[in-house]
Amino acid sequence: MKRALVFVLLGSALVGCSGVGSVYPICTPYDTVRVAPDVLGTWTDKDKGGLIVISPDPRGIQKLQFREDDGSLNTFDIRLTKIGGELFADLCESGGGKDAPCSMPVHLFAKVEVMKDTLKLYSPDAKWFDAHLSQHSSAIPHIKQYAKGEEGWIYLTGETKQVRSFIKKCAKKPGAFVEFMTLTKVSDSQELPPADTEKTESTEPGK
Image (tube, rainbow, N blue to C red; front, side, top):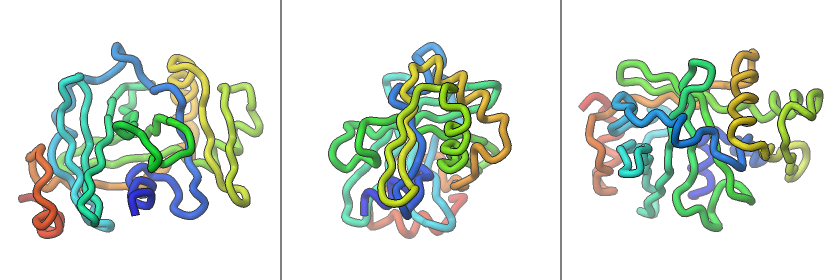
């Protein structure tokens, strides 16, 4: 169950286990947007339900939390950064472990649009990046790890500076990033409620 929710949350395909990630973070401490009040609070996805809480972290980043049906708590570190004038998020599961979404440690990234009480996330399209890197194999150091069939993971192995430059160029190309989640703010609360109240609150945005 955890792997399925992780894939939904981070925009990876549910069928075939595919995605794009970076071995290195997409930002350094100097590139990190440390003040991002618009993203803080409790959010819900109207289609998938559940609650996602984003709160500040003492390290100067953001912390994302959501709870599984079995009550287990999942926490991700989020670092926001500007690349080419657009806002991006670097997401990394806190602590990693055997249930991490990929077979190796990876930083997942998404383009972010913040509007009033709405948070839109755009993930890198695995098929687009696969085709692009097949034609431009020297654009960025990378590894392709295929599972069954043609689905698989693309790991960008270049250092942070290279990855940022690559993302900046790709973000301008049609189809490189696709919308995969629209979150609606439920409240400004930065604390995840008890499990038995989450279902009720996630169906009542705006409170």
